[in-house]
Length: 401
Image 1 (cartoon, helix red, strand yellow):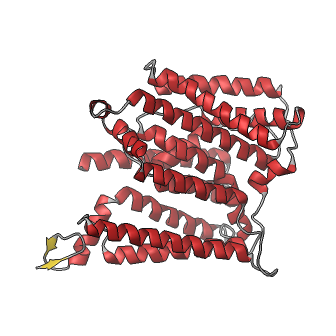
Image 2 (spheres, one colour):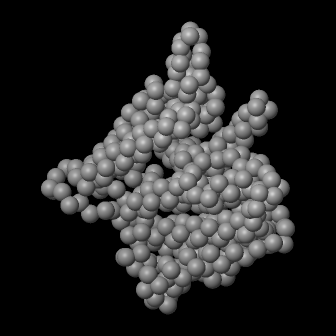
Image 3 (cartoon, helix red, strand yellow):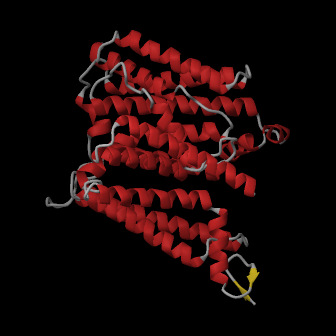
């Protein structure tokens, strides 16, 4: 008899048993990460190395930044047991509002950005009110919102594009962090940030593992734990090296790091995060436990509105113009990212990292298929099949459980 990390006893090969148990319990999370790696390697081969070129990596980040931002908000909405079909239209509408404020009214970018975020919060509050307090299905409310804000975008822009934006606003999506190192072929500041970020992630992981062992909580088997940290450090440093060989880290990537860290903390460490999961898992039990379910639902939609507004401005800054078609179809990629990343269609399940992985699965597929010349029609069909498979996988896991 032997004992492995979580204290359970087993015979034969304890590490094999522990690893097998770990993968069974984390099959969705680990499966999507493996899928992202496989898809990336596949398109790297199919594009003859173009996919992971520094310029294309930068473009991949910029192209998916607004999807990742909205996926963070959509994750909380889905975990709470709802859906938001209006995010693409809200993003397009906010981009139009930003253009009117900065280009036509010549307002300061700071004032315009602040006003747009407030408008996004108001939009989320209005839709959240109907869902939370009027008990209307979120599907219907946000479907109406999708139509309303798509129409308002057309009215506001009068069928024309408005631009260009002030340079300060453009840097939101197209700017890069300055290099404080010695001028050369590599962006030294980017490499330093990569080392610090990798070190911070490993430190936090070690601390969490020690705390889990302190309180006799089951931990990740040691071989997987070591391999995971080596791969994480390798991925971060590899990405930073590629970015450093071009222009460095885009400004928007810094914003994504901050948002991902914030929402990881909210979902894993905060009271409101635990309550959102409780709400989606069993709304009656959450209510009986003293959770104000209406107010919590209301807050998740406000949060979604703010993030949709931010995403709309990032997209507009990248295009350097507000266009009538901006945001079209965004809701499909955002919802798909959340589900592919492990969120459950019935609520109560999902992680921030999973949503980010899901967003980049969609992004790598879009980018890779475009490079090898697959038409937009087949791209949509393939993405639809991937989404269907992800939800089927979720249903299959529940039946097994």
